[in-house]
Image (tube, rainbow, N blue to C red; front, side):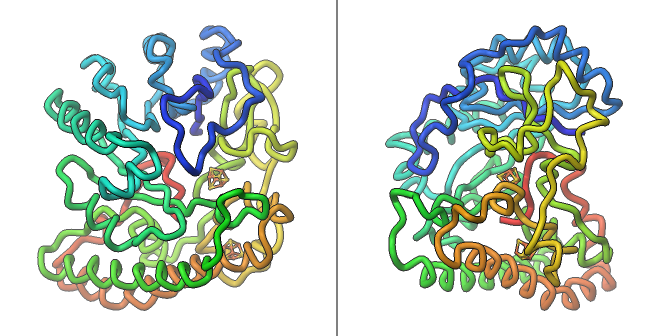
Length: 360
Ligand code: SF4
Ligand code: SF4
């Protein structure tokens, strides 16, 4: 299974949509690495994803964990300290999920002046240091973002293998201080940007035989091509759990302060006892596209009473639109596979749950 390891809630950025998250956790991990090892060793194929706050602020602890445990490693980072990762440890990562929101303007507006350039310098550096793993640009898409422009920007930057995004769900929160009018209008323009991106994505396949690394499209198209059902795609509560600094375990790395989410601890539980303790409920389980969407987000599903009026319907309308557009593109993609222009296996991504939630 896959485990987010929250190394600290400290962060070296103050992004507009984050605000630092929970204050309820200790700043440092309270368990010993031996205790973590004891818990993880009961899992046959563990994947550990370092998470924060900013995990590279605890680079020493991270190195100790890598040295002590046998697992596959992933990190989700804002990228500012990637230059501190030593060659030996850099090579240990299967994937790096790097938070960046798109163009320099868009990224710096949300994350701070100069952040974009520092990220880009560090990407160059880790590629020079022979990082050959999967580098995923992980966008937070806030209201107002031009999805087409920003995804295209990141896809054309040297260094990134894939681009993934999540809607900033704070914009759907009733109490969110930045809630601004015009959300429905923005959703309409977001959907139209999705149509343009899918059009470009398919035409690139036709022209070059390449499937560009747009994670939400690849993940959903993979299911459509294979006719497979999906559980909650981020895996929270199913095959993806979060170990907090105090050793408690949450189904999801974001909803760590919510009772529904805290389902055990590394002291009292074993990995095999965790799945199924926090699951998506209605309206998802009766939804006609549940099998393809999977319920999108456990946190939102279990705290829907906190959303603004029609918030859930608004989010779902984006999922429905995305799925419908990809279903419409399916015959064309099947033809390209049949003609040998692309391979069905081009859509076999991710190789394992690497922390991309697939459904934005
Ligand atoms: S579209 Fe909405 S209601 Fe349907 S499964 Fe997805 S999140 Fe749930
Ligand atoms: S999609 Fe929702 S449930 Fe899944 S990890 Fe993100 S916040 Fe948590």
